[in-house]
Length: 586
Ligand SMILES: Cc1cc2nc3c(=O)[nH]c(=O)nc-3n(C[C@H](O)[C@H](O)[C@H](O)COP(=O)(O)OP(=O)(O)OC[C@H]3O[C@@H](n4cnc5c(N)ncnc54)[C@H](O)[C@@H]3O)c2cc1C
Image (cartoon, rainbow, N blue to C red; front, side, top):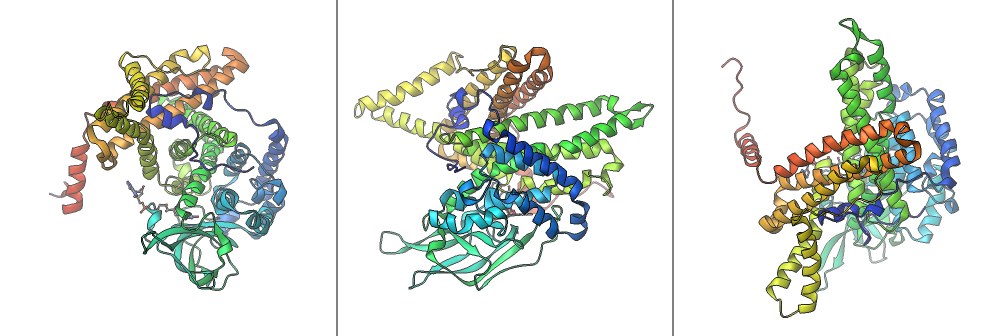
């Protein structure tokens, strides 16, 4: 199914919240699996589950690679073409269907899921989103069958989160080809792939008689002279997935291999990542399900102090939180995948929220499952330690979570910032542009006045059983908007240097979007199953609302009163003088 870039001009639920706006129709009603895909998804899901019996998954840990027979079986199942349109030989799943399959694969094994994700979520995503018909016809059939595997080459030794600072260069020759020189590091599928989406710096006229450097995305194939990949990296987890460096020594790439426009490659990279993050988020939402089940069985069977450990409050608290995380995480991913499929909404912040929430929830869950299993959890014989090692990377790649929080907070603030600028401009020149000023002032003024008198925009479509929780959502949207406006008035554009504040606003937005998706999911369950049938949905929604409300209250309170300067002082001390002398043996 063709996708739209994440950051379109369409409405965004999360950006709206920074204005105090509630765009209920983007989140309600809770989506259902498209009827046309239901049977296909069920068949693929059954086949993926059968792989657990067919594959000796331990072999990947021993051999530290994906055995060729596994790869062949994955090809035969069509797993490499899940998201490629049928006309090019793929399965043509919607985003919702793809995310569901990534979740199924994550329950099987994180390395297998990574191989498929690096291929489809990012490796060939630019070809799908920006490729010409000729490029698609040339490459997609082989990528759909898995004859060729794809990889995404952005990271370099000096360019990680700051991807724009990459150094790999592509020089235009008089014949119209490009010559690539440079290297990439830590590329998933690096040693397996034949098709690479590679980002390199190109020179362009600056319009003033000189030249400027921009980034361009290229298709590079393994058979091009001068291309090579390094040895497999030794890493903490994901031992079955290939991770290598890539090297380009005078690699000649024809201009027809440019993806999108020359010089617009940074946008290509960011669009791919915005879009691809949801696959990872889906994988993290369901990845630990089997582990929770194992921890549950362990807790019910294991007796200490004369009782099953499941009876102890501190263990119950862990199951409560893990189940809540998983319910909320799934609600976030399903809602956002549906937004992508609808095609007219801007889902860039929503997919970042899904990635941050689900990667952190998975890490908490895996850690807690291992804790419940005690010493057993630490033993390589069981699944706990492997998933702990495998899942640590998820908070780092496809946008490190710190950087994504800044993206969510600062992108959210952009809207009110623009409006404030217009308001102050309008107030400065009230007579010069009377009609325009009235427009700006009235829209802004209405929202400002609404907040002052405590009136909020309503979340439409919530089941009456959850009316109190909807009211919490509405009131915190108004508070987020008020806090955003206040900090913008106080700090203006200097806000970009106040990461403490931006993080608090981002965390509030994350909690609010998660709450809206949870209320949507629980409302549908209540409508379909009634209050008794959906008792657990109701309880989880209420519990998550209480927890997130406390977090939001704390985050917004700390916008003014906080310990930020003390934390900075301590950090500065450590940077300049090292850690304080330790207290032992003094
Ligand atoms: C197993 C594995 C597979 C990978 N696969 C791929 C792949 O297929 N393709 C690819 O291109 N790359 C891949 N990567 C690279 C990955 O995307 C990067 O590791 C990631 O982007 C982070 O970059 P970095 O490691 O250089 O960390 P850095 O950017 O150096 O960040 C280090 C820390 O600083 C924080 N930080 C950075 N900037 C800021 C800021 N402005 N404000 C606050 N905090 C900040 C980060 O959040 C992080 O905690 C892979 C990495 C690994 C380990």
